[in-house]
Image 1 (cartoon, chains in turn purple, brown, red, cyan):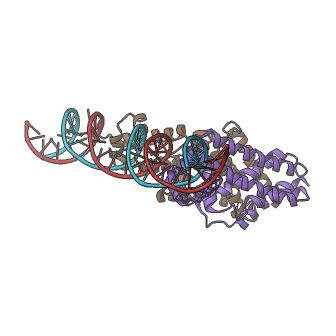
Image 2 (image 1 turned 120 degrees about the vertical axis):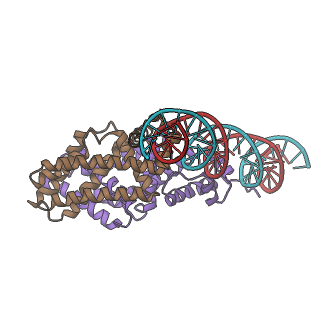
Image 3 (image 1 turned 135 degrees about the vertical axis):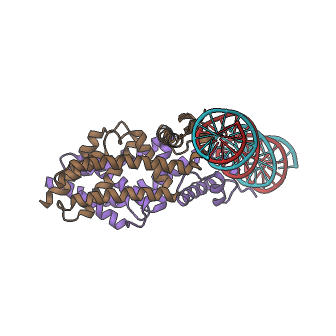
Length: 192
Length: 192
DNA sequence: GGGTTTATTGACTCGTCAATCAATAAACGG
DNA sequence: CCGTTTATTGATTGACGAGTCAATAAACCC
């Protein structure tokens, strides 16, 4: 049976299965067996390709961050004015792709993991740095203190996500975008 | 050896030990044995008084929320104007008591736990509701849409906490208060 | 002061789970 | 073709941890 060149296919399937499983369970306490079963293979094979559970989870996280980064870049490419850049970032952050209970759950758990796993922490910091840099750049022409504005908006985004975990029914992604953009308006207007 | 009337003392010691242990580990994956040892007793005794690990963790969380609620109430009692009420809530949220890496870590883990534990979820929702009600009341005389302002500020507070988990050195509690109060000013000013 | 209640623990059970291994088999390469 | 590499899994190991239990003993109560 062994067709060759399985490695990338298997790894990919495992990463996707891991994300689905984490989202569904709402926790990182998912077993390698569960993930492997969902990806259609034995747990032994999962270990064969990833070596350890931690490395598998890091790969899953990297995958999510990559998708997210691509979405932000795509939205930014369309923006012409500084205001549009901020809006693009906010909209990408709450795209229906990203703003779902299971994705929020996965994020939350990565934060927890980051407290004890150095690679995870590094990855999350990279994401933070990028988001922040994008926001600072966008705010540079809009407000007196772009660093502070960027800090405020990114904290606000994270906060809205956190609430999504606890009460998924409380806010749609359109409402989330409204809320954050309204706050952005307030941050910007007084300076103009 | 058995002095009587130990129950409240033991329960109290366990709750405090649990919080300390969770904060130190940065995770809810702490064993009952660890907690019990820190509290100076056997794990069997911990089970005797709490029945299960979950109940112990819920008690720990309730304790944190009680302290937090008391602090907010105390600060609110001193406030005379609506603006002072908002400020009181923000300051209490980031009091040096609360705004520490280990407390933030405990919070974060309670959010995770809430995804699978109904009692935990209930408790977190109660906290959210109270904070929100306090903010809405304070904002009523200050802005056109107090609900939205309350939502924005509480999300902002949660977001700043979340960042504290990942980069405890990035922000002092004074800076956190500054950041949030500056945003509050922006939310309020345009309406006046 | 004997029976009941409360405090306390060491030892044990029972699950679970990450990780390893040995075995099987197909594909590949010269 | 035959030796090596790649794919794959069932079975097993080893650790760890929640919860239970029986046993000990002090305190309390009539």
